Length: 113
Length: 116
Image (cartoon, rainbow over all chains, first blue to last red; front, side, top):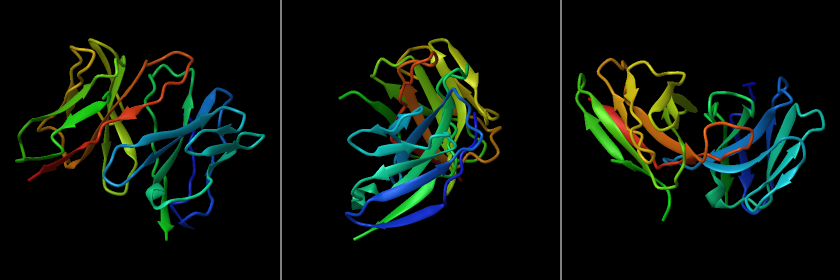
């Protein structure tokens, strides 16, 4: 699976939008872009995923660049409960290794009141 | 409530002892996974199983063993051969382990193992 690059940390004020970037310049045509987040001392949880088009769900929005070499996770209104490590992960849908995910170090998001 | 349970939350063992971490799911998922997380690091895959009675090594399988005798259970044994076993261990499951459709992974709460 192709590699992703994320900033180590970001900071946001509560109730403001947050844009978490992810670069994946070696993405292939069959790689899905996934985002998970991990709250302190908990297991990760799914946030959103997409292939080519922008995606919205109740938790966040995913904006994918036209060339697919980068994407941005958007939290529309950050709350203190959104403070977590956010992982951007690529997964080749044609891989034979099940759905095991390759978690990098992610971006640690700090939300301040 | 459907979900994944891992027990215990904290586990202490003496060096040289084998220890088995429990992972149970009642989501009727075919695929299950074990990950290891060290402080400040991302998750690394230890083993995964796409179906009962079958499992494959992940990136860091040395010093670990698993079994998958039942669909709902995927225990992980940390053997004395694992040189640095102290870590946070996370179990996950997904509806299937392959195919063209995406299946979200659901994670358990984790077991924090400390080897003294």
